[in-house]
Length: 414
Figure 1 (tube, rainbow, N blue to C red):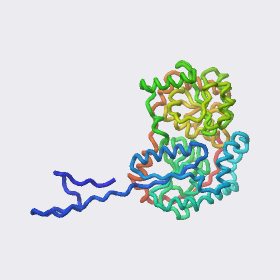
Figure 2: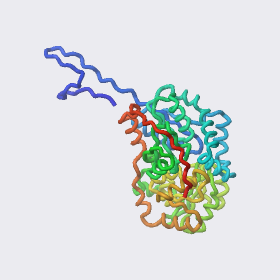
Figure 3: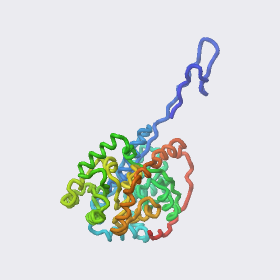
Figure 4: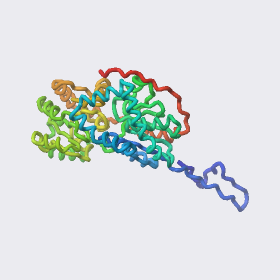
């Protein structure tokens, strides 16, 4: 980041003079570069977008980057903010068909898409205020934030590069904006999906998760911690454990998933109910201590489990990927959950079990001997890509490649 003063025996840096004789001209002091500044904009809808943003912020600060974080919902009018924050889980749980229709309509119908963009336009003024200190880059981990930032970038009101980090395996229309400089994904499957559907270049960045997910699970300390957690669940080491994740809001038809796991007889279900206390109480009679409330020790829970069952496939799948925990998609929530399951299934990253019989077969395959070991090599971390692209290569000085956004009609998910 800055030049170092020469030591004895080393040649002088350029710009430093040396005169013969007893007097020596004062050396020019090296001037350190100012710390790079990055703004990260997330969205407090669920915990996945905030989780990726927090992981990125922690790692960038460790690299000496000044990081500011903002919640995109705070830039929206109060009514819109209340609808996004309060109605999301209600619609998914009690009107899943309506949520699925909305997701598909944004993809396929111009009117619904334009309405979504108009809502994003309402956040421009507040987001522009956040940008006033001056940043080398702005990173979005939330699709609506990417649209607002893209609108500002395209209109010339945002001078620094914008980077979108996609937390979903499947790319959907609101993740993509032609004025956004870089779209980074967790896996090659997502990059290929986005490029084929929207003709926008995407680069694999790798995962953004807490460093604890990459800890070794084979050390004596890790084995002891695993045994202690499984003892709390009343499960011995020989019995496979299926960790059922329902997101921070406890969404989806979780009871049906639990029944399917129990009926298959391959694994014992442990359900993380998030902040949905009603769901936890509902399942506690059936599962006892294996119905969990909100937990901050997810890396330990994943280390104690043998397979993950996900109904959304967002950050929880990424965490499992880094932890080396095999994953299965079952009963995905409509909209982005089903789209994520289709991409993961097609790429061979996680099977989409559509029936109880499929789930039983998938759990049996995932809990076979040595299965976890074969997945234990974590992919590269997205922070390395961010540091390289934003600072080492000074992406702020690179010319933006003009491109026209191709609004291809998305293909139906397989």
